[in-house]
Length: 141
Image 1: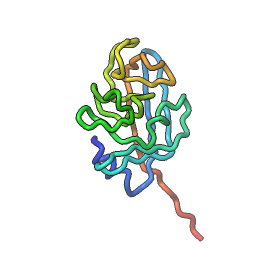
Image 2 (image 1 turned 135 degrees about the horizontal axis):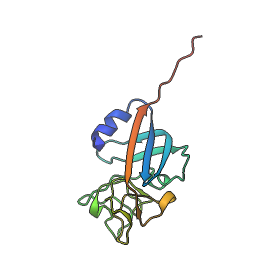
Image 3 (image 1 turned 90 degrees about the vertical axis):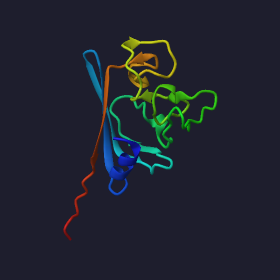
Image 4 (image 1 turned 135 degrees about the vertical axis):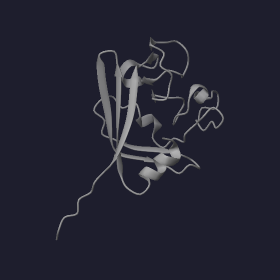
């Protein structure tokens, strides 16, 4: 969908985010009561957590989107985006744009993972980010 479109969708109305992730025979989700992506010039990622399963995304809150050619991750020693773009913060605690590496792996920073669930060196099978507007009802006075 792209960060420009995510910003357009989330800029004028509050949105919530649900992340589904699964591995062989197991499914989990994390839910966030507030989700926003900043304008393209910085494409920062903002969430408010009310997650039900270990929150691996909190580490990425407020981070600028990084790609291989636009490294905004604060870790100057490594370009964490060498295999895919993400809101990296000293690489990641969650990487939903990572590669599917069929379970356990030993390479650095490139698997699709959710650290609080399977650990940093385990590539999960599937992820999906879903957003929807938060509908606010007005009370009649």
